Length: 498
Length: 128
Ligand code: SF4
Ligand code: SF4
Image (tube, rainbow over all chains, first blue to last red; front, side, top):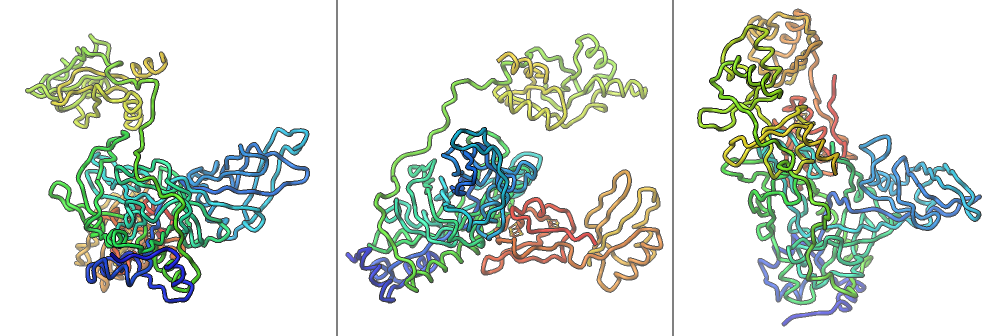
């Protein structure tokens, strides 16, 4: 069986005889020539991805001021950096927002630093004998920093769920704008160009692997946070110096009504040492699957809508229950390709050497959910189970009487078979009476009833009421029979009791 | 050609109908927002009838602007991620062969959906 070593590959890089293909080119190559020839003829395959990677940030060292300060709070262009490390070190996280402008965050500061822009630094301290300074304001550029080291706890997910929205309203999420009624699908990851998809068992990737990071040379630290290889959700923790990076490949981003993030460009070279490694790099978009899930349900696990391949996602249209739904990637394939090409050029020009990891990324393990010691309150803990209801063909006067009798403001309206069809409030009824409208309840009720279920989290029910500016929700079961009523007063009482 | 008509809400007359009947031009209403104080209507008008239609609206007391570049993209900010593609109701954006995002801005009806959907603040609506 054909094979070669890392030092052989580096020898070829040194003497200029190395042969490099991007992961897209390699897929065609393997299809045509097979893996044995690939091991003989191809030395390195380059991958690339460019997308929103929220779990990113940088350690900055500012040097000491005179008189010196031990920064307890530090702000860069108004964005707080965590400074609970020594005196003048700070970690600036990509999703930290500016105190004054929600559309500017840590990711933008990192981009501006790399672009060489001047940044306002403000720091505060309580002052000590050795660090007497209490306040500091200055302007710095990346050249003034001793170190500016990107350390990204979780980057380059092997794959990621695609998102859609079953609800009736537009959702603004970290997966972008999701249109109502399964109006679109958004997804991320670069499919067949994606680093971990080309080495899904981590034969060549691990601690110490030299990579392309943001336009400079960086390294894999190890498995990223939430690394979950058993479910094909592997991640990497990455590092590299901001001073070597290029603002084309590191971009601050802001997701409307969600917050800020950072688009990071990552390229991993895969040395083709044997046929298994070669075979894995032959992967194509039609082999790579992920799941479309419903972000309309704001729970930890979003319900599965369907499985899908990256080929379908990239075609621009996927089928959901017989309708054609348009897709939007959030990652840029154009830049992913440019990254794979640029890394290929570095290797071909002898500027970049491949490395053997000192430890491979863990191939086992999965990500656990949070342990929560306080159970979440449910609507059934707060609702009143004896809701009064009225039939839609009853007359308005009956509704008025029921409301007066019961001292409540909301009356769910039922159809003949007892399912919920509307709601009338004391306001609807008074308005009808004042206008001398004495028709049926059906003519005055509102048909858009926002409902709850007994197992809904109290916190989500409260948000629902705030969003719709209403003060009560009928609680319904699976067949839309009303089993109770819950008011904002009930929920608040319950939350206060805790 | 897209055209934006601004009217004040004091105007009660069926302005659009009158212009269509008066000019005999087939006009498509792409979008209309009318609230308590003013209204904005985006129309698709055949290019050779643009001047005639614009003058007819002006005679009715409306102000008119023609949208030559209804939407502008800052090429330095755009990363060709495609987040704008699926939110646009009239398919202004699409992928070219090299996965750059191409734009056919002549279709734009000024709905604003792409402006908030762009994570890189690259898109702007041109008002006039
Ligand atoms: S969403 Fe913005 S950055 Fe992405 S392709 Fe569209 S204009 Fe460019
Ligand atoms: S404003 Fe944007 S989303 Fe709306 S029509 Fe124009 S290009 Fe499409």
